[in-house]
Length: 150
Image 1 (cartoon, rainbow, N blue to C red):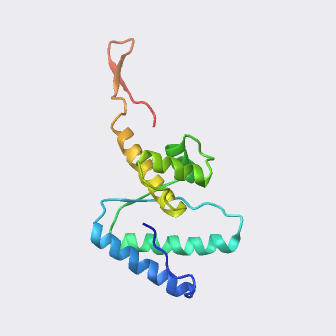
Image 2: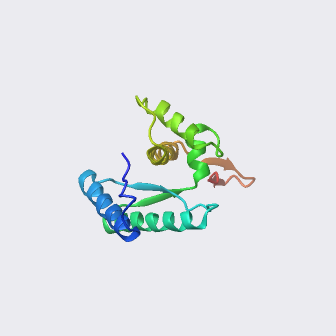
Image 3: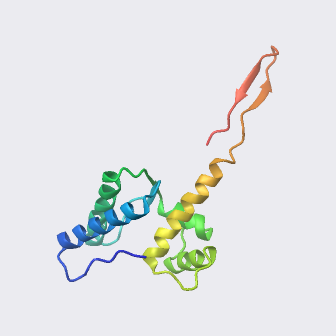
């Protein structure tokens, strides 16, 4: 789903509604972790400001509930679900629908949130695939542990 405060309400009221609704969701579902999209630069300064305020409310609600948070760059999220970091919104929607075998196309906001969750789930799965340290001999017969950089 998508949290949608009334557009006709004032900005402070919409932000307060968003905070209350998010707090209720966190209380009901008790998530182990949350992931969000990193801040990105918008062409429209007003839209970027309002988005930043809503994002701040979300981060504060998660922080108040002590839910750990990870952030991903928009390009990483898109890359993770579509194969391209420059994918369009409708490509993300289609990929999320296909990956989750949804009956209907999710709204763009819901698709973005689901894409972030998919990105995080895949990142966690990949953490377990790290190569173990390997041993390499040196001239003096001693061994040297070599770890691959992340």
